[in-house]
Length: 377
Ligand code: MRU
Image 1 (cartoon, rainbow, N blue to C red):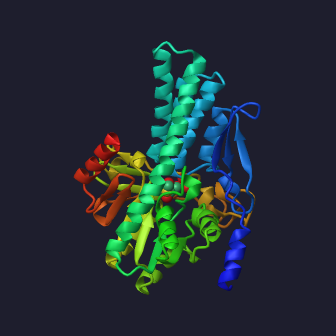
Image 2: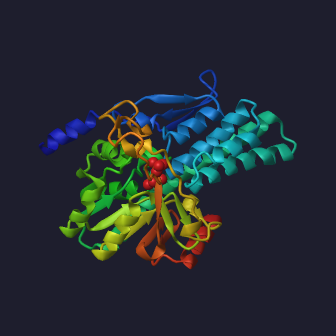
Image 3: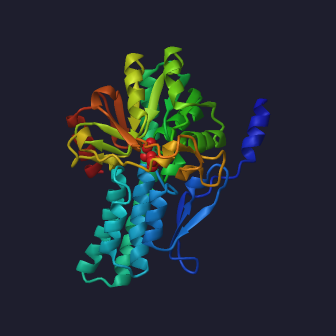
């Protein structure tokens, strides 16, 4: 396609619908989500009127990705408070809806604490509900700001590690605007490189079993006019061997005190291959993903998901391709191993990029410095 045609095609792409929005009466109070299970075939909204509906949306990945889970959890508390439900009970349900992304717990506690403080200070239930909602909105704004800063730090780091530009970046899972109040984590760095004219190619792992790369990252890359190709996860090795990858850039669901990184399953093998091929392995995450209370990688709880996500393949462009299941491929009764995440040890991570700065090498001291930077604002 000629350049002008590409620009015309991009001009006609409608803006991405909001991934999450709070609606006041008369529509609300409700939390409205872009249903990520149905992308890219359908851009439909999912309306959550209560906490059990939101918990179901989280567990079936209608809403997903670490920073967005934190934001959704905070709005979930605001929803419970606005509708007069027991906020402590709501917090208990929400913070364990998925176990690995620490942002979920962070967002839930942020809003629940704001609610509790207002009541303890003699506020009415309405005032406490308003405080919970403001806490959720503040987290939403802060995450958008963190996205911008991470993109800037990440782009500068790429420039230092790979002088000369023309980066060929490999990414895994989905880490763009669909997971964030802003443009995302790892994907935001690739997007910044694209806008700076420094992205030669984005390699997008399909990310079996739920295909976040094929369904979501490819959708975001196409919408942004980036040069990208989709690959089966097991094709990454040959891509490294051919010298086609300059850097791996991924997000994280939890970073432990020692710098171990939990991210979508399949990240760890990329780190091993990156080390073998002398390619930088860069992790981009807001400080809300750092968890100083988890000592090390072995202490991170990795979510185990239903086996049918592995034994079945989603029907192509089916309405709910992202929630697993579809066409059975394995013999009936086959058991599956289906961890949603894996853990990469810090020694395989070249750098951790956050909104408060970058650490490299990745050590416990460095993680503690980032946590202190986040506290000091
Ligand atoms: O199971 P998901 O789709 O919620 O997993 C998401 C990821 O693993 C992302 O890479 C991670 O949240 C970091 S990007 C924000």
